Image (cartoon, rainbow over all chains, first blue to last red; front, side, top):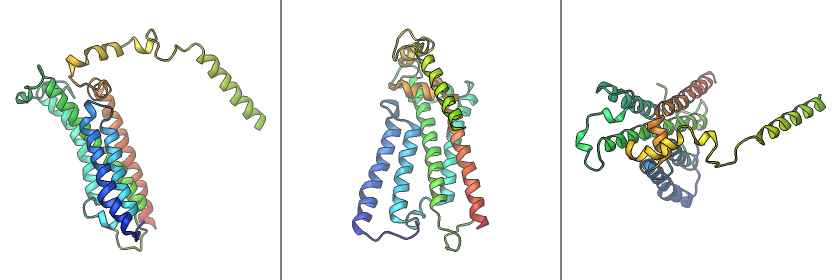
Length: 158
Length: 92
């Protein structure tokens, strides 16, 4: 997948229309996951689909500056850390593991009674973590599978 | 050998079909599956979590340990695949 397809229309459609639309829809599914069907797993898969589509059509190199292999590994681990960190944060303030109501962010409690807003934020936090982890894992797998064979100088060893 | 395989498949299918006759109807409110904790989740989600999507509430709050496990499974599977692929790349 290293050589680029030479169609201006294809480049325009993927770069300016489809990838942004898919990515935006992934963010919508993530942010709206508490109100409508959706959530972290689905959002991560949709985000990865957008990235992989652009890799498959535009070639791997055009995008590698933003989502390099190292960045994707960092994103994946960051997602896991966000999930477990939310749980540990609740533990640090005297709650149970993943008991979001224990996190003392009282200034959030204006929209809903009691600790409900904090609970929603906790749910949202771990959904973001799940989305990042799924996005990173799927993109990394696609990255390794579409990487040019050795002999091509894209190696980016670490 | 192929006849034995056919008999085995047919026998298993017969067992499954015979067992499925005893299953409760789909969406039966008296089924054990919808009588354990599911009614509690549906009735209390508004006051417990305040998330309108009950599926999200169960996934990310009531059963967040389970979701943590799922995420770890995906993470670990991805890690294992990457290790295998990186190894192949280095050997070439």
